[in-house]
Image 1 (tube, rainbow, N blue to C red):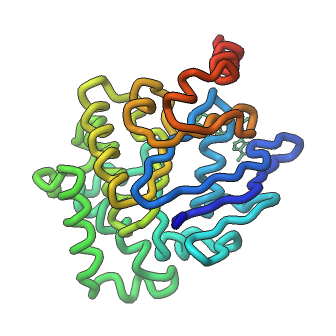
Image 2 (spheres, rainbow, N blue to C red):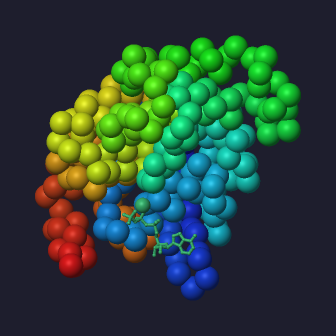
Length: 247
Ligand SMILES: Nc1ncnc2c1ncn2[C@@H]1O[C@H](COP(=O)(O)OP(=O)(O)OP(=O)(O)O)[C@@H](O)[C@H]1O
Ligand SMILES: [Mg+2]
C-alpha cells in the first residue's frame, strides 16, 4: 500500500508556479528520489508534503486519510518526518537535546507542549533510539555545533527519525559532504528505506542512481520523467533538461 500519495499538487507564488500538477506516491520499503535542476520545485514539493506550505491545488493522502489541510505537527504525529535543505540545529544544545526536542514536537500538540514536556519519558526514549540508528549515540552529550558537517546531517536525520515516522522526507541530506561522509549517509538512507517510505531530494547523480528504487525528475515545477534508475539514465529528455540548465 502507498504510505503517502500526492495528486495534482500545485503551488503558485504570485505569478510563478513552483510546483505544477505533480502526482507522486511513496511506498513503505521504497526509496523515491526527486531530482532536477536548481529551482525545479523540489523543496517546495517537500514543504507541501510536510505541511509547511499549503497547495494552491491538489490533494495529499497519508494511508487512507486526506491530510491536505493538516498542519505540520499533526502530520508529524501521524508519521511524516522531514529534514531540511539548510541545517536546522540548535548548535549550543547537545546532540541529545536536539533529538529530544524533535521527538517532543511529534508527541505533543503545541498547547500541551510546555506543560507536559518535562514529565514525559517517551521523547527521551525516542531520541536515544534515533541517535543509535544514525550512529551518533557516542556523541549524544556533545554540543551539536561541535559535530563534523557529516555528523550534523546525520543528526538532522535522527531528528526526523525521533518523531518515529513511517514516511521520511529528506531534502538534500548529503549537501556539502565529501565522498567519505556522503557514503556514510547514503548507506544509512539505504537502510532506512527498508522500514520507511523515503523521499530523497539529491543532486549527486552517482548517489541517486546507487540508492534509489524510483526516480522522479522535475523541471520547472513539472514531472518530466519517472522510472527506475536504468530508465532515467537512458532518458534523452532528462539529459537535455540537465544540459539545458547547465550554466
Ligand atoms: N516562499 C517562496 N516565495 C516565492 N517564491 C518561492 C518560494 N519558495 C520557492 N520559490 C520559488 O519557487 C521555485 C522553486 O523553488 P524550490 O526551492 O522548490 O526549488 P528546488 O528544486 O528545491 O531548488 P534547489 O535545487 O536550488 O534547492 C524557485 O523559482 C523559487 O525561487
Ligand atoms: Mg531545494
